[in-house]
Image 1 (cartoon, rainbow, N blue to C red):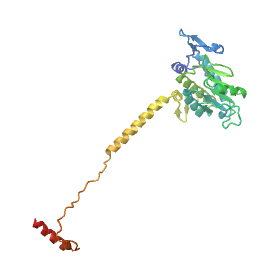
Image 2 (image 1 turned 90 degrees about the vertical axis):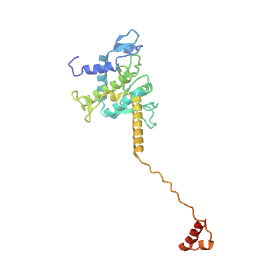
Image 3 (image 1 turned 180 degrees about the horizontal axis):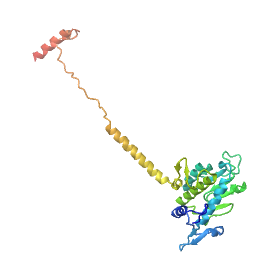
Image 4 (image 1 turned 135 degrees about the vertical axis):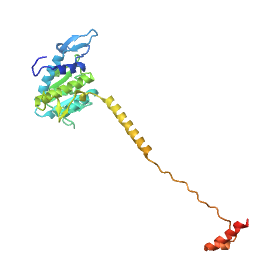
Length: 276
């Protein structure tokens, strides 16, 4: 690799290859032919990761040039890109819009969630076509991760990559956030992607819904086992059944039995007991 500070490092290239950032689709848009490195025998195409890196730096420069980070709006309709989008917004200060994009967000001023951004960043121009169309009405520049078959209409800066892969899209959002923070001077190339004395790894941007479900189930099982062990240690006291003897000697003299004197009631009973 070149010794230029803006050259693609071996570590970043290895990350891109591992996350399959270079895997393109079977179809190629005529505007994306310049980013295709080679085609496979199965018909799929390989994207030049050198071009991916160059476009990522260009996009980072455009984002860092915005004075107010909140004026940068990031949109993603893909579920597995929403975690990366939220992390990118948290680290760079951008405004996130995830899930379904409400029509009129950029054009209808009477809408409650109306926004007027200076720059729009999306994950896929085909999925987020509504946001791209409304951005064109307001002359808002658009940065997008694009695959070989992605439409490039109204897209100003397209980053060629595999925008359909879970790890690929997460890694590219991570690289873009890192380069933006480097240009803003918040991190350095020597220290790496470190914020608040915490190293931000690429897997933090990866979609992990299934893993989170497994972790929650394991936590629920651990809490249940802990509660069961606690219940076993508790000694529950049960009430002891007490029997009261109600058998008395038959009363023969009711006059003496109605007296409150203990001696008067005890004598006939004793006599009756010995009379049998």
